[in-house]
Length: 382
Image 1 (spheres, rainbow, N blue to C red):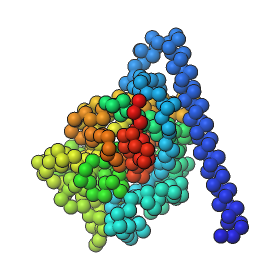
Image 2 (cartoon, rainbow, N blue to C red):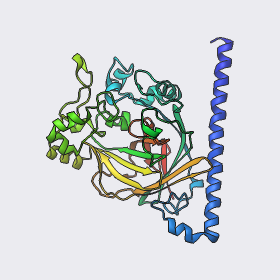
Image 3 (tube, rainbow, N blue to C red):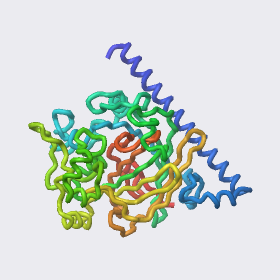
Image 4 (spheres, rainbow, N blue to C red):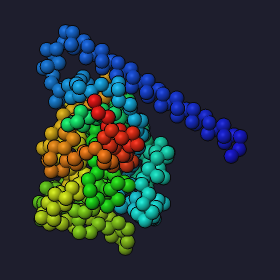
């Protein structure tokens, strides 16, 4: 490395460090602002707070995690990057992804090669090209967020914070907002058992080349022409995310012009039920901009299981704060039980700036465990 290259590398590292420190300072300011708001409510605005409610009022106070001292929970820095149309099939195909063989044959996880490249990857994809044919001008390639997690022996509590981004209208949607009712959406996915490459890729196992806005999205006519499959999937216009295990075949290579994916190669309802009973699914928790939330899972399609979840969402001082909770072990179908001594692969997604479908930012495979400092996210007991 030449002296000039060394100087440029040092300057880049210094700039990134300064940017991270600025984000942390912004988070700290937003946290203090939220505390001040809560103190004000306790002193004279309790009635207004009660009227707004915790389920849909967008309240950042301690209603969902009132028993958790977040100051005692170390935040974990997370970089969420823009993935474009890089599907599960794409990452397994050596023609499109140089790391396909280390992933499928060598046992490498996504983070093995890409943990330090997320800013570069996100910036490249969001600009447009092979994996993004419909770029959104001005959309950031990455989002820097912090994640905190705690439990009280019965319930999991998670808090995410990240800076609000400037609005970048989507040129292919009237009004520029794909989901005008939700400025943000947050999702957490917990990997179940028996999922192909599940621990290595996390939620990527559900992202297929024939999902909504993906290159082999079949479209409404093809879905309607497969009435039995459409009925079982409750699908009309598009195909939601799903797991390979729910199909009899999924085309990965796309040889001889074959469409990648396997949306219409659906296993029987009885086989799907058996997979669910065996724990082969992605547990899916979603929180919306108004603080409402849904609990469900991904297997043959996206399903809401009615499992317990509480949430809050708040925008204050230019910083989003989302808090949600769910039982460690609810017993509900589609809820992964979280037990001491086990490590789980999780993934987070943020649909920022009124985004929908695949136009989100995501993490790579991330480890989570209860009271285990070796996990990337240590869920500490309070």
